[in-house]
Amino acid sequence: MNCIEARALLHAYLDDELDAPRSMEIAQHLATCAACTERYRALENLQHSLRAPQLRYAAPTALAARIRSHLPASAPGPFPARPWQWPALSAALAASLLLAIAVAGWQAAQLRAHRTDALVTEAVSDHVRSLLASHLIDVRSSDRHTVKPWFDGRLDFSPQVKDLDAQGFELIGGRLDVLGDERVAALVYKRHLHMINLFQWPANGASDSRQPTEQARNGYRALGWREGGMQFLAVSDTADLDAFVQDFRAAVPLASEPR
Amino acid sequence: MATRAQFEANVMQHLDAAFNLARWLARNDADAEDVVQEAALRAFRYFDGFRGGDARVWLLTIVRNTFYSLHASATSKMTESYDEALHDRADEHAPDPEALVLRSVDAGRVRAALERLPADYREVLVLREFEDCSYKEIAAVTGLKIGTVMSRLARARERLHRELTGGEASP
Image 1 (tube, one colour):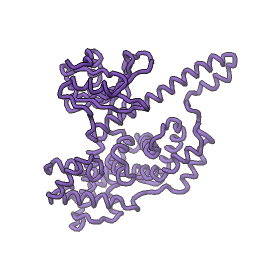
Image 2: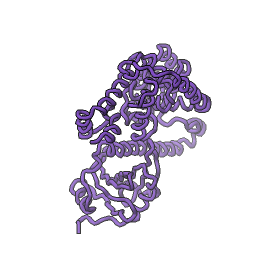
Image 3: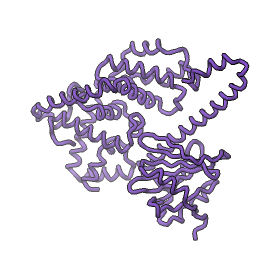
Image 4: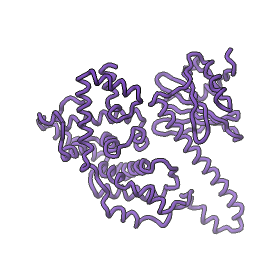
């Protein structure tokens, strides 16, 4: 590791955000480089100065009391901000059965939406972690035919693996991941410098939903869709994520057995 | 149904962290208290949407959003010109040779220098150094990418170091 590389990572090293091999490289470099060591000491001193306890503000004691005095006795139910819901229920007793069914259906949809939300957040975290900790892939794909058989022995479903080289998305590998309680397959594609994680798992009987739905988290985008009994979720910060999803869906899956 | 007890256990215990972030963003006690009070009430309202995980990070996210929604129109311009004015004045000071070493700087000077930083820099430093947040947590609170958190933190430290050493080359 040279000084330029070391300096780029010095802050992350100070903050204990590097994986073990990278930390080791920095430590080795610091052991032999006086200039970088001096720089690192300056950063440590700066951090030390900032962490002086008198710089941290504590909440005034009266503030907690004031907040408590403003809180209602308990929070609203799980689905607030639907003012029409309760008046409608009380006003039209005759229609209450129908309405209750509608509300139940709506609540179930909300629950599903909540779960999807949580899953997307988790998928984005997995994506980010996979980039940071360099445990992006379990199986490296120098030859694309190694990825598909690698999964086949490890999951109780057979993920779709597709070759998108011609479209400009290089398949660089795959790994096992967990989303919610599901074991899922994650395929890793690369577009220029951007990584794309494509998660897939069985949809468990849920009907197809071919129009991709989009969510955004922390600057990453997630596109999800259901097709052929499988749930797909693509996560990346590349601007070409829509093209990726389109190309992936259009491409022919690779066969299970390497030719 | 969320109860007061659950809210107390998960959220109210992080009131110091919430106030610290709000105080560093607002830079005065009165505004910081308003922000925290409003944020706590919002947190209570949305508590059912909290799906477990780190309640402190969740609350800090709400505090930050509340600060920017309450102060977006009123202070964004004012804050920046205020920053620049103070910053220019700071640049007129001759470098203090002792401070160049930056072994120990008294807290008052660090506080003043930190208050002069642009809010973007100040918030990542406050989250990292005072709240001991990881890059991932800072990314969650600020909505930035982790890579951006890393580079912004580096730039914030360089700028703060310059302020404290009167213009010496950054670490």
